[in-house]
Figure 1 (tube, rainbow, N blue to C red):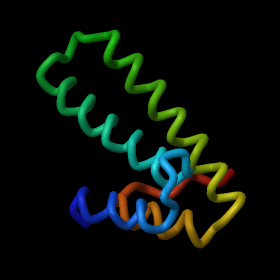
Figure 2: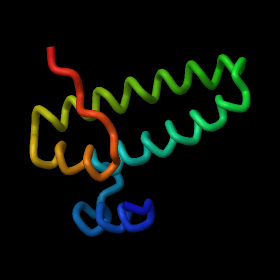
Figure 3: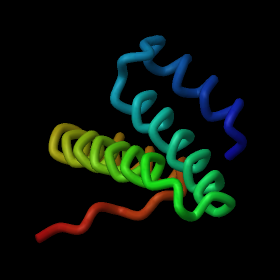
Figure 4: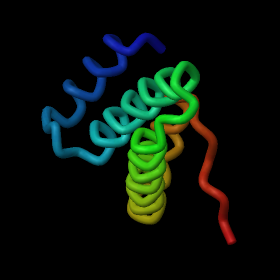
Length: 88
């Protein structure tokens, strides 16, 4: 799903930029941007640290959504094309 279409779907559903879905979407965009930056600048350790931090935040958000509403969680990970959380 294209980014613009997905963001409009989220806007129509929640109309809140504080929704879990919107925040995960923003984190995913930042992750893609940082990943492409790190492919060019392999020794940029500050960006690596920032990437790990954002990955952790997104993981915690997804875990929260998974506990609260499994249907919304499944829909979100399929739309963003990200892997499902590991369950212990």
